[in-house]
Amino acid sequence: MPVVQTVTLPPGGSTGWHYHPGRVAVVVLSGTLTRTLYDGRVEVSGAGDSLVEEAGPRHIHVGRNHGTVPVVLIADYEAPEGCPLAVPVAEPEWSRSGAGTAGS
Image 1: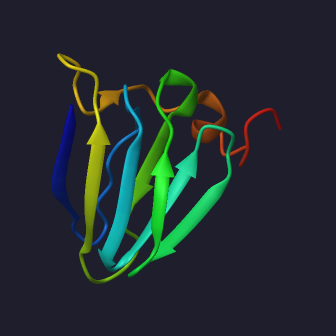
Image 2: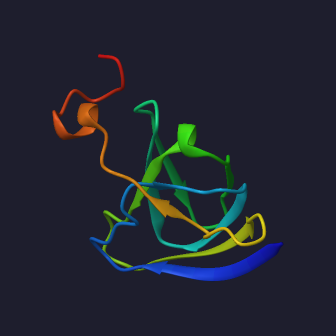
């Protein structure tokens, strides 16, 4: 069942590492969102950019606001009935070790 929410990350804020049980379509309304993905890639999205976050625990990621203004986005969650919109997970070892990317 689709759920649409406005999400705000304050300057210095983070979503924490997580994944989504269903796909999520996102439009960034303001600020700059920096996401680190499951494979170590970093994607930066600014106002007007859109992105899709794939479903499942293989697609863990974290969103951060390294800027000085809030990141505001609209998220359209395709969450399966009875499932949470996001599932928190531990930060990957490769991220904690400062290795930079998965498998390096």
